[in-house]
Length: 412
Ligand code: PLP
Image 1 (spheres, protein in one colour):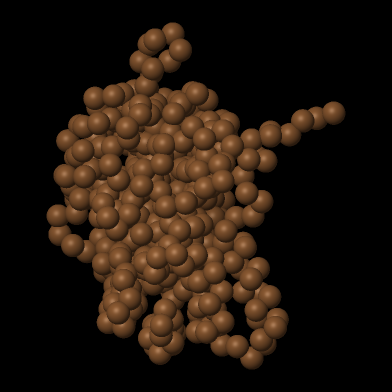
Image 2 (cartoon, rainbow, N blue to C red):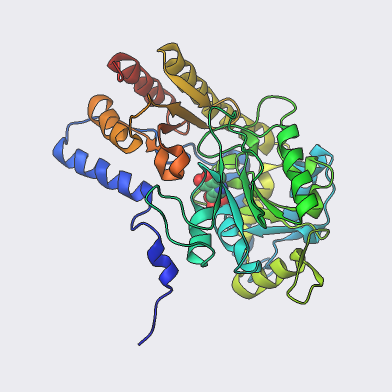
């Protein structure tokens, strides 16, 4: 009889967001009159900006005639989008890249999930805690970990604790690691690693031969000057880091699907025979085998994000969300609550009083305020004792949610 990949059984049964959604659905059924405000899942709510819509319309028009119709595109993405990415995302930061170092994809989720398969199954991984759960789960599925212990920590994984005490900047690992997942601006803490912090990780990777997998899906939200929006702003990072960026939160592409991953040609890792191999060549091989490219229409839409018309429109959209973030952050801190993030990321990380369990608090918030958020424990054991609110909602609904929270005196 066929056998399953038993590593899958090491994972808890349900993805946290699904568990929260189920609870909300049950609550709604029991209280059909309840006016529930969702500040939970990190999905955008504003429509695509006009420059993107127009570009996509034009591209659909091209698909409608024999002369301009396009079938399969290059697995790595069309040059027009890659050139726009190199110019607008990297040239503007003083980083030079070649076309064949950028891989366009249909989302950062699949890229951060799939990248691990080009590394040895015995690779030792270090993962931020708390963080976007995909890094850990995909390594569990790939068999790089043991079982989860009673505290929810998987055996064999190095957890990089990001807490209020260390300013959400994890310390270097105490035991050797091969792959380091960093996420900045961070989901869920909404905090950003400084240039000095990133330089510390780059120096560590250069010294030890580790590879950094740098997820920068929220870099467009960075507002404070001087904070790095790309790991390649740190000299020497091209030899040690892969970087992931997405149009999802930058330009409302969560349903459209487009992202890109940079694998510099200078980045090498060791093969079993001791030779150094290019990770760029391996990722290219992987993508060409398992991926057939992003649709032409979508790539034209993504290109328009960087156009003269698109840039200010996108900026305005991000400003909208960041104003929501300010409203949440200032509203809660003004009411005496301790919150982090929300200045350079669309997430507010709410510190709960000691001993209050984040899943239980999620129920309290729903029952007392009719507000949905995300329990911190869903992002790793280090997220326990915190709660995530997102700035992706409607302005008036966000204000209303904050007002309800302020009135409720939740921890009194
Ligand atoms: N990386 C982080 C840190 C995220 O929070 C998300 C989505 O929430 C993603 C990647 C996935 O982005 P995409 O929509 O491009 O798959």
